[in-house]
Image (cartoon, rainbow, N blue to C red):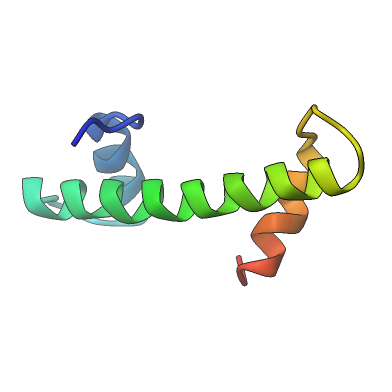
Length: 71
């Protein structure tokens, strides 16, 4: 599977969250989870923009879509 988000970013996020050490497996799993959630939110944001009669997805669409997911 081709990922859009780099694995190094996942290491940084885990470290920023307080991890002293990060396994390759945990960084890969975080990437899988983050990309899955991002795809769902992006799809919802696109539908919101379309429903509003726009082709352009705005930040407000993404915010609303992420709130609908409990983020």
